[in-house]
Amino acid sequence: MSARCLDGRTLAKQLQAELATHIAGVDSQPVLATLQLGDHPATTLFTRAQGTLATRLGLGYTSTQLPSDVTQAVVEAQLKAWNDDPGIHGIFVQNPMPPQIDPQCISAVINPLKDVEGITPHHTARRFFARARIGSCTALAVMALIESTGESLRGREAVVVGNSEIVGRPVGMLLLDQLATTTVCHIATNERGHLQEHIERAEILVAAVGKPSMIPGAWIREGAIVIDVGINVIDGHTVGDVEYDTAAARAAYITPVPGGVGPVTVTMVMKNVLEAYRAQHV
Ligand code: NDP
Image (cartoon, rainbow, N blue to C red; front, side, top):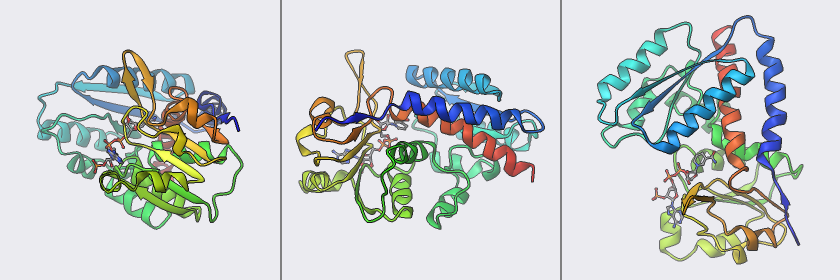
């Protein structure tokens, strides 16, 4: 079998065309504000990409960069100022954050109505009850790519590798919402040597670890849907967590890295800005 490539750039363009139409139809311009802490080059690139896309879709956009030695109090003050500003509809804090910053406290400060990353305790709790209005951008992107295959998830074996709060866990919840039989693997699964057996039975595999090609293609089940979230830069080249060529020979569908989950994730940020705007104008 040779896998069909799940081209995130193509899906993102389709979603963006629909989104631009919806944005053009609202009464005033929704505005996204992003906060970068430090000067991590990948974050700077991602921030620029967000700004370019926001502007292209008709959203307003502003970004603030604070130095890497910024204090928690200064970050929280910036977020509270945006919470109180009626001209800002969506707030996004870039990762990674410097070690002195507590991401959980940060997520608790953002007004849930303006949280376009779906990270506040409010949205996390609603996700538990399958009632999140704003979802985690990356998890929404993963689900959109799976949906684009037209395959039903009901009763299928889904395996997520990685259990972070912003990717692995929300993806696990959304797969459960679709009644996939869902296993979330993590560092301890690997320590016990059980990763291979879980991956080998996955009809849907989502890899979200951040270790280059750590999942051998030979472990992929024939006919699986493989969604590779990982972004790893090796000698100037970006690769995912799954060994692509050998996995593509076994899977039915596979996302490339780059050009898979990434473009859809940034589009989901913009979709969430529109959702946040609408929630503030009911
Ligand atoms: P984190 O580092 O926060 O989480 C990684 C997860 O993988 C943790 O749960 C970790 O467990 C687990 N893990 C680490 N090593 C192993 C192993 N050997 N076997 C199984 N599990 C393991 O990363 P993120 O979730 O934020 O991101 C994951 C990847 O996805 C990164 O490459 C990131 O760059 C990328 N990413 C891509 C996006 C996109 O749009 N394409 C968006 C967001 C992220 P533990 O915590 O116990 O160590």
